[in-house]
Image (cartoon, rainbow, N blue to C red; front, side, top):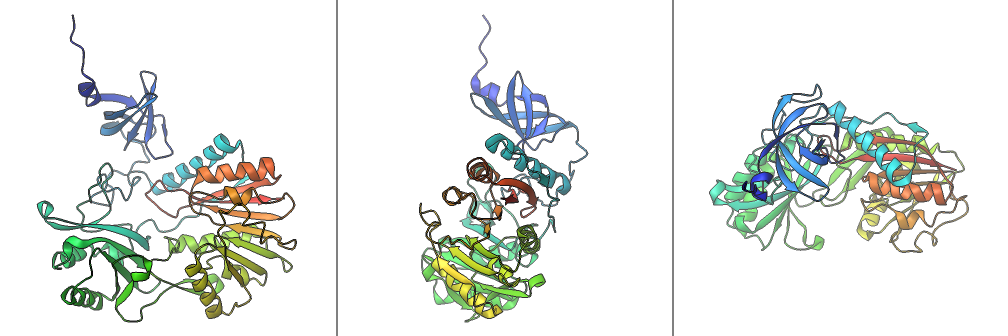
Length: 443
């Protein structure tokens, strides 16, 4: 009688497969013995040898070991030296143009599968720089003597460990080129084992680092951080608890600003505030959103999830009425300050929890003619369910999750009677599987 092959031996053996397509997570999709296999690092059209990592009831997961024939869209030598280990990027092996095409297909597939919708028009993708674009990030910090001291960076793909890295190619170079310097800086601190994270924020002219420390820093450590900031022209902050514990180390009165040059706007923000991660794409996105709204003099626009006023003030610059809602009271205060700074004091900023079932009904007024919303990944189901079929002539929905966009589009079209006029993708996060998109609904 033949000996049975153990599950463990089978799971870790090498197999061959032909890759048919790319999954929504950026993995190559094959069928082996009638079962779907999602293979990390594989691209459509390739014949690969892969290692099975996990077996599920309806599919398996694997990782490429060797490639017999490479796709013409494959990048043979990814720019980052730790690509494949670091979890910060997942698509550097795919040509940037092919990346955005794949993301566009993810968007269209979600709309078809979830909402049974096909847009009337697919917009040209919005693209920009693919390296050094990231102005916001949260870097992990851990002191690991066995790995040479302090590690600073993103977590590894398949594990909870921090990646051993000396630079980051997608971070703004002001910070991305200084990872090794940050490691050395923290190595020299007495509190090196008590620093858990560094929040990164970069504006048009400067950069800021927020050190999240589990215990208060002593004077010696504060001095070293101040000295590093002064020598490198980087604003330095410390945070020992919640947001209220953030304090500037150097300089005493630091500020960050980003601009929307087309609208002659400047926005002040704190290093822990939400701002769009990619400055170039953000500027193009705001312009596209306003173009899709097709603003007219008599319009009154409702801007939901408005944050610092990224869209609100651009709308106000077009001489239309704007009511802007956001749940975070601190962000609303900074939005109001930005409105004053830019000379648009007539914008009506309000604090409102848009996930309350009656939140929108409380603010809707008959003369509100256009709607712009930019919700978080969870989408805006509670909001779209409250929108009447004749309330808005145009709705522009900016999304960071194609699945929740599709879910909400289903309500807007099939229940509220709007038409899905156009959709498009924006390359907010090159080299990652993140899909940023925009949709226009018309009445």
